[in-house]
Length: 180
Image 1 (cartoon, rainbow, N blue to C red):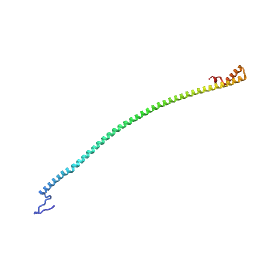
Image 2 (image 1 turned 120 degrees about the vertical axis):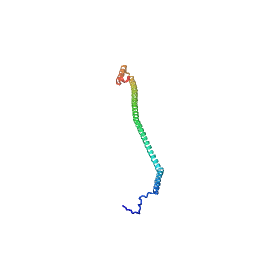
Image 3 (image 1 turned 135 degrees about the horizontal axis):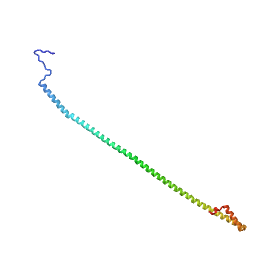
Image 4 (image 1 turned 45 degrees about the vertical axis):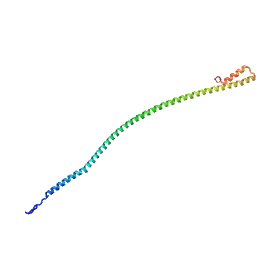
């Protein structure tokens, strides 16, 4: 504690006089004006920038949500198309199998028809060959008969011997051979 003597006056701790009050008021007003100026020139643009950024982010989120929904719908459409493609591929394969079976049946029918024609041609050729052989045998018989006739005439054989020779020749050649 400080003891004061009689003539001394105690100085104030804060010297509250009019000058101090005026300076304090001016400082408060200056701070308030500075606050208003900073608010107008600094805080409002910063708030506007933050609001614009917030709106931009919100818009991007909405766009992302819309894009996600569109992607989901496109995915569903593509999956549906894939299912349809599987069904379509199965129908195409089924149709191809049917056409292959039809072609197989047609090829078999054509082959059977060709085989029948070949067999018929072979039969015809066999008949022609048989006819040719028959003609050859007839010519041979005529030639043998001519030779026999020549021998008969040369030997002056009677008709009974001649008939006997013809009969023997026919037996040697066979009845079926010269009749065909």
